[in-house]
Image (cartoon, rainbow, N blue to C red; front, top):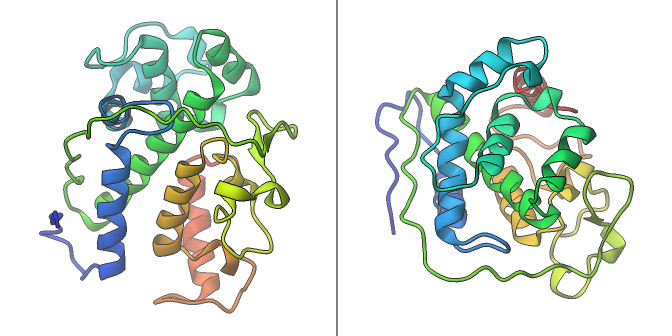
Length: 246
């Protein structure tokens, strides 16, 4: 089992968190639904690179990101439009719009690969923020695994007025029967990646350990080291700093 480096952390890290971190890193660099393991690893690397990209910083400081032109700090593994989307998602999410999204799709990135790209980009962001909160180095990405994408599109994913098709809880059947567990209420933020079911499963693995399981979200009595109101205060502050839509 590959060990991760938590040296320098000011507090002990729970074993379930360590297991989740290993799972998520392996997931990020394994062949996915629309991208190979090498491409997914490149997406993960770009997600990290975005935080120190000069173009992204200039756009962030500009009244309109479209007014700033230039090239991202990228390694050339991915198409420029893909790199641009990754960097925008990671660094300036509050100003993404449906018009922007439609432009990304019109530029040649299909909606399935887009959803998977969002999943990888945000999983890496979460891992990096966890490491930063402990004052430790970001976890090293594993070597990408060989293999081809599955190119699986779930039959239950349908347009519902969101930017991308999603699977409603009542349509999570067959191969997707496990997608939302036993949750009676499934927030849209969980459903958002459901066009690519493995990304929902990865998101749930992250949420189950770093927050609470989906089925327990409506229950205000759930606690860990923090009471639920304390957890929500921290979550709300972090979400605000990360410019989360919600």
